[in-house]
Length: 138
Image 1 (tube, helix red, strand yellow):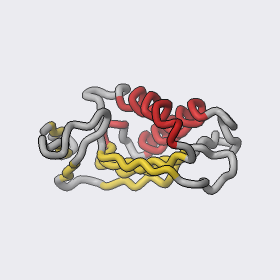
Image 2: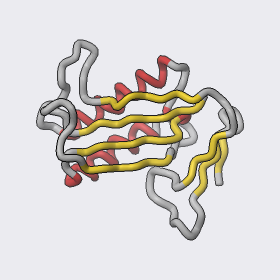
Image 3: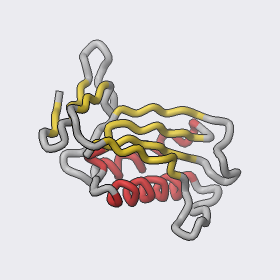
Image 4: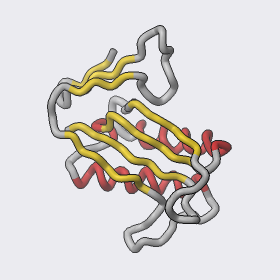
């Protein structure tokens, strides 16, 4: 079990549940501010789709947008306790993990929130291939 006393976040992977790569089975929060971040897609500040038909570019934009939302609340990736990721094609799982790992390795120690990953038939915009919503604690 690891913890971040400044933010009262404890992460755990009980041996019976295994130790997953890049996320934690359990995240416990002891007080603090809770920040809910709406689903982030591959839109830029002007509302244009970034990386149409290019999953890797879209994933990078989604994590960039997530970072902007976190910074707006005085947070970084280390504050994340839960992500829910929606992919329109599970064949992009490897590219999603690459973008996710780059994002989480940007902080020390690397963050490992609880994660749910779901394949969906479509997202609200026809060109979107990925959307991620998040919960952070500050």
